[in-house]
Image (tube, rainbow, N blue to C red; front, side):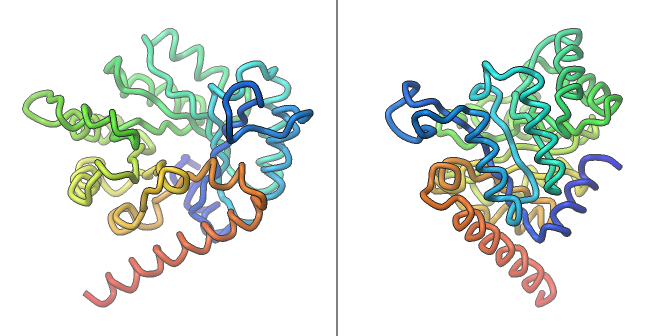
Length: 267
C-alpha cells in the first residue's frame, strides 16, 4: 500500500485529519515553548504521543529538534506511534545530490518512518521519489511554505511560472505523495486552487501554519478534501492539556471536511 492510501485509511479509522508536530525544545534552547525541566526529549515525546493518540492519525517529528537522540530511541518512538494506530513522518526537509539523498532515505527506513519531507531545491524530485518508493516510503515535497519569507516561492519564476507552481508540476510528473502548503496569510485561496490543479487528485496536502501561527485550513479542505493532513504542533504539545487540544482540532478539521462534502452535494 502506498503512503497516500495508508493516510486515507488511517484518517478514516481514526476519524482524524490531524497531524501532531513534535518539536521538543529543551529549556535552555529558548525562552518559551520548551519541555519541562528534568524531563528528557524522549520522555516528553512519549507522553505527547500517548496523550493525542485517540485524536490524531499522524505524528510528524522535526529532525532539527531530535538531534542527539540515538537511532534506537527514534525506533522506540516509531514503534509506539505505530502500535497506537498512527503514521510517522520525519520532517527532515531533505535536499541534496542523489547519493546523499539515497543515504538519508535508507536511514529513514531503518528508523521506521513512513514518510519524509523533501526540499526540491536541488531539482531532483523525481529521483528522490523513485528512491523513496523503492524503500516503501512516502515523499512530501515543500511547495509553498507557511513562513512569510516563503513569498519568494511565488515571486521567483522558472519557465514563466511562479516557482511554487513549477514545483507542483514536478510533483505531478514524479508521482510524489504529497505537497507542503502553508495555511498562513500570504498563501491565498487562488494559490491553493492552482497547486491542486497542478499536482492532480492523487496528492496529499500537508498543511503547517494552523495553531500557533494562526492560519486556517479552510481552502485546503475545499480543494484537497480527505487528502488534507493538517499539522498542529506548539498549540497542542506545549498546552496545559495536549489531549484536550488535540480533540479540539480533530473535531474542527472533521467539521471542515463535512462542510466541504455538504457544499459539493449542494452545488
